[in-house]
Length: 375
Image (cartoon, rainbow, N blue to C red; front, side, top):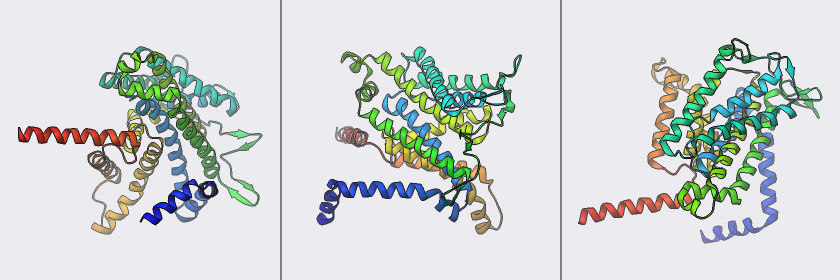
């Protein structure tokens, strides 16, 4: 055991081994869509594409909830702002067809502005009160988009906007199948690479933010806002920055979703989506970037796995489908979340700091129980 531990430590210190690991991971990520397409079908490549979008969303919400400790239940509204910005500026709805390099930053900036607009009046709120206000904000955005079809039709109301332009570079559209160096790339494959780059960039930004002065200020506010203020941290500006940064991730993910799907409607941005993204952050491990990525990938793909396996398993066991696959999927999904919260309350992959905090809290609770029993 000691021998292998020494070997692993030596490999970690060897830069050649480190770079070899990076190359192998990059190669695996590059070949992943082809492996999935060949083995279980192209539908799962699309599922993977959506999972990467959820990774971006979860990382954005992690800035607000995980780093700054501000409970946000209306996060999906920023996703909607980014998606509708792309849809309105790159579709026949307003007769505009602007290029993606112009729309994507615009959608991200607009989402950041909405993040500041949400954060400004809620600076004094925390916990449940903040959750209620942000939940209301998310619903206001959805209802607003749902009713903005009269007296002037802007969003097309509940019907939504279709025929949205895909990402296109000099006539190279990502939705079409292309042959590059003799290899055929479908639209799902090409979107996978774009989304993967965006997700990796999001991970890099989050890691750098966590280790920065701003990241430490967010964590200080999360732990004790009054103490952070007394140490000279401008809590107002830092909290607004958390809302704006988190919303920016949502805006970018929304724009990419709109271009990928080719259609958006208010039904895509319901409260359940906000809850789902929050579950990804909590399940993976609040404040831990790697844990959040794991939580997003698990919760984005697990419901789809259950959806495709529930009916065949019931047919095999009972000879008929007893429970509706959709209901069973949500039931098992909820049960899995409850089990994780009971068995691993810090999340599946918590940060070492948070893991230590939970262990200390548990020891203190055990000590108090023992003292009460003996006293």
